[in-house]
Structure formats: C-alpha cells, structure tokens
Length: 381
Image 1 (cartoon, one colour):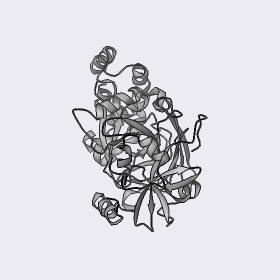
Image 2 (tube, rainbow, N blue to C red):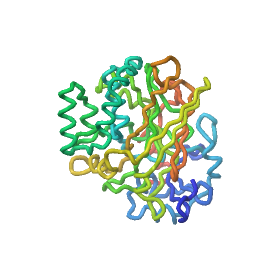
Image 3 (cartoon, rainbow, N blue to C red):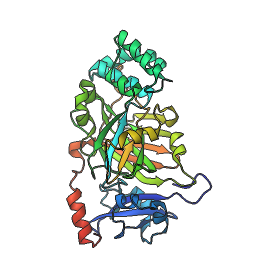
Image 4 (cartoon, helix red, strand yellow):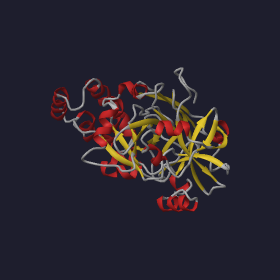
C-alpha cells in the first residue's frame, strides 16, 4: 500500500493476531514492516480512534517490529502462522448502508419481486430493470423529484420498500455484524449453508469516532444472501449476519494531506472472483455513482438519535450486483465453496477471502470478555 500522492507513506492502523501473545495487537506499517503499537494509553483500535490526535499517535508512537508486511499479509489462521491480520477494528459497532446506488437498488427490487428465486429474477430483470434504472439514475433522495418518481411508480404498481430507502429521505442503515466478529484479510468468509443465491458486495468502509468524525477508510465485503432477503425483508439479519460473513481490511487508512474523503468519493473498487471450477467474474463499484454523500450517511447513523461510545465502522453500499450466469442460463451468479474473492481500491490495497459455509469457517470464540481478560493479563488495562 504505497503512497499514490507524492506525500509520505500512508498512515495505516490495523490488528494482528500474535500466537505467542495469546491475543491481538494494534499494528501499523512503517517502511514495509508491521509494528505492534499496542500501549496502555491505547490498548485497542477503538482507543486509538478516540485520541485527540490519532494520526500523530500512529505516526510517532514507539512500536515493536513483528515482521514484513508481505509475509504477514500472506499469513492466515488456516496456515497456522504465528502472526496474521485480523479485521482492523475491535470495539466499534459494525454498521452498513443498503440501496445507496441506483444499479443495485434495481436488483433489490428484482429480488423482492422474485421472492428470492433467481430463475424468476431474470424475467423480471428483462421486464423492469432498464425502465426503473433509467428513471432513477439521477434522482436525489428525498427531493421533490424523488417524490414525483415515487408517486408514478406507485401508480404503475412498481413501488418497493427498496425504492423507499433508495430515493426517500431516510437511508437504510443496519447492523451488519457483532463487535469483534468481523474477519480480516486472507480469512475464510462465510455463507449460510441454506443459501442457494448469494454474492459478494465490495464496499468502502469508513472508520468513525464516537463524536461522528470520519477518521479514515478501508475495504469490506458485505456478503449478501439474495434468496434469504428476497423472500422477506424481515430476514435481513439472517441474510447479513452469520459466522464469518463480514470481512474488513486489510488496514484502516487514516485521512491526511495525501488521502482525504474526496478520494473515497471518487474511488473505483475492483472485484475478482476465481472459482475452483474455473469460473471467473470481474466487477466494479464506482463511488462517483453513490446517491447519498458519505457525510450524509454518517449523519444518519450517529447523532442525537443514536450514539456510539466506541465509534463505528460504516459500510457505504455497493453498485455491484452480478447477473452473469454461472451454471444454468437465467440463474445468474451465486458463490461456490472455494471461491477466492479479492476487492481492490487505489490507496486502500486489497482484501482477499476464500468462500466457505459459515458452519465450516472457524467459529467466533474471542469476544469482548476474552479481549478484556487478555488486556488485563497483559497489563494494558
């Protein structure tokens, strides 16, 4: 993750599991070396993010070299390495925004109309997709124009709860995963074994402090079960929150002179899926096409209506919604066990995960009590 702006190297914050510690370390990267910067003043990533000048702390705090960035990025739990990357957040809540792009909004409507059936989806996509997409592409959510479009769609019998959050005044913001349950780079990522229609969702994830300050950004895969959610919006938590179903990483890149929120607004995310069956899929998500500004999404998440004392991570949504057939014509794309999924964005690096069923991913066992006990044993709290 080299600097792409001519300024000093990126300011990165993350977490790594260190077997000899028996727990996680807060880490940064300096000149290609990963350093443990855990301290009593900032024993967790959440603590670092709450410091008055977190950026300067990361740059100047003394640390212990753990190994080269290349070696640690190649490591994983499955390879039984001494040190491997975790999701770069710990005590923060994991929130996500849905239906923030017109293209993916159309696909959510199709899911709902098809009741989670991928075969029916193609027929509905042919009938409605272009019509809805072209009519919504430039509509500002919550505007008078959006209200007019809503009225027209209701009259045509095409209104949907997904269009409500897509062009209405209120964004869809939900809890994606539990505190400490997200997986990091090179980890297996989980699908519920009952799902037959699902896909990756390449997204930028903001790191936000308890005061609502946007500190930086990273990458994420908001794994989605299209059949579960398509059957009923009330199955959203079952579609989104399963063991290992949320990947974040590899590091949070803090904003500075060389990397700002405008870089996020203009980011291009590239996604690649390589299957054991030889199947390959490439896609992208262009943040320029997002219908709500990241600052608006953050403001709708935190404020007088809701506080996050340990901060939060916020998935910003995706333009990507694959329709390419994988097996049979008209059935579209769905994952298979063994798929390798990589998400890349300039300035944020790459997060890579291998698809497995949630039941066969490493169980989530290290929770908040374990973290507190570990920090106490390490004389960090």
